[in-house]
Image (cartoon, rainbow, N blue to C red):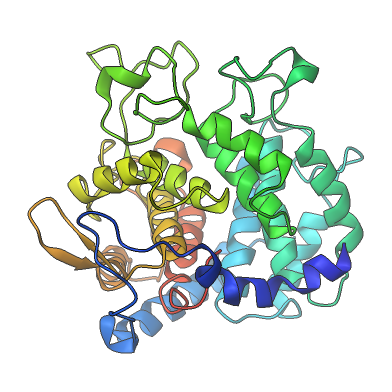
Length: 382
């Protein structure tokens, strides 16, 4: 375990070259347009990052090391990861306190979650990603090995009575027997990949089956009743009946899930010429926006920023061409939008409190995580 985790930093640096996709359709080619610091306002970037970090460290963290502990340990894991990715070391006082708090929530099952909470999958996934980032001397090897084992037992499969024909198959929910969804499944893929799983790992390939069934695209990979109703190439939250959100009887595509779907397919080794990748890239071109979470308005917009940045970073392209033929440098657009949204005290918060985004610690962690992919987009694919 240690040998795999100790290679994490080198793996990240090589990531984009391993998973980068050439341009498709209306998307620009990255090869001839390699980004540099001039593609976004470096000074503005550094200022908003510095203010955001100052907020988390000076105002967001409790004495016990947690961030907004009343909604679980997830915010603590996200905030600590953001600090680490922006240059703080595991020995930094704020980071060290947060890491200690996470360690206190390691459960006998191997999972890392609040014992009284219901977010076992999500919390374990973000905690694993954080501890991998901090595991620079192997100190978390045992915890991570146990957590990885815990996560591998979560997806629905034959053990729960769901074979490959079941829409539950390969998906992960928040915990227990709750229905699976694309958000948790995407977090699961991220966490397994962080611990060293490759694209052909059986657990990731199993998850890909569920991910493909969350796409509005009729294909051999999605034969659910919803696949052809909208058929726009975007992704929805879950194919499980009861979550219909569109007057057509189909499931509405929206931004955070569409970028999560794209990212998950890339991490599972789906190639650039695959119809699934082509379809979601087309959806992204038609719905490129940073003022809202496309399809959801203000709801979940900061979570959207993370999936947006992580997916486009993994794709390895500096620009997206929208439906009107206008080229957008996504790094510059992200920096500018988050600069406008940052509050005077350095925090970010959503005007829509849905999905806990009324919490400044959560939104600030999300914003900093999204920004962590801006200068590293040239070299990191994780």
